[in-house]
Amino acid sequence: MKKILVLFLFLANITYSQTKKETLVGNWSATDNKGIKNKMVFSNDDFVSMTINGEFIDGKNFVVKGGKNNGQKGTLKYEIDESTVPMKMDIIASAIEKGKAVEKGRLLAILDFINNDEIKINISLNQNRASEFNEANEDSTILLQREK
Image 1: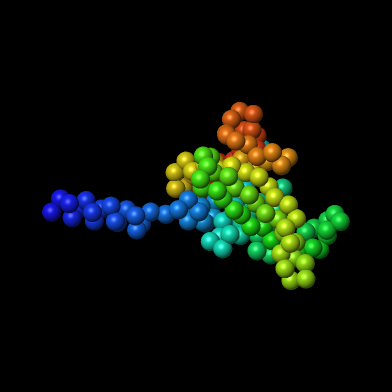
Image 2: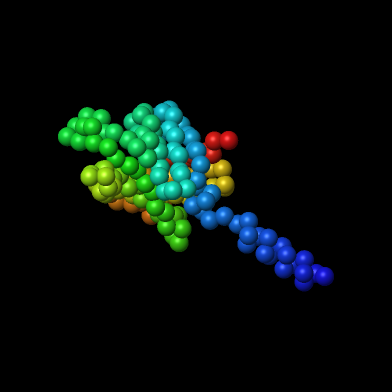
């Protein structure tokens, strides 16, 4: 009987365990070190929507405002590498050209789950991905809480 119970608990744990990507999917919010409210939304189809410079960008369908690409339609997607600690995350900006997404650039990030409802993300703006969370990169690190 004990063996059956142990086997049942083991199989139940495997069945209900989520990947980190599945846990990441949802709405997250935070206030950065400058007091600015930020939001990130990770979808199960790999799109990410986020607040950039106070403006909420819809990752599935955004339009560039200003600059040489003014009016250009684009998308934001994300990829994570769960095999590293902290996990690596790329935020991929693509332009829609002739009906197809063409990659234009990446934001390199690291991310760590504090628990299922809190994550820490460091996004590099200089194309050098941090390898850890530390004092040197705390200005570009944000703590997000899951919105319920």
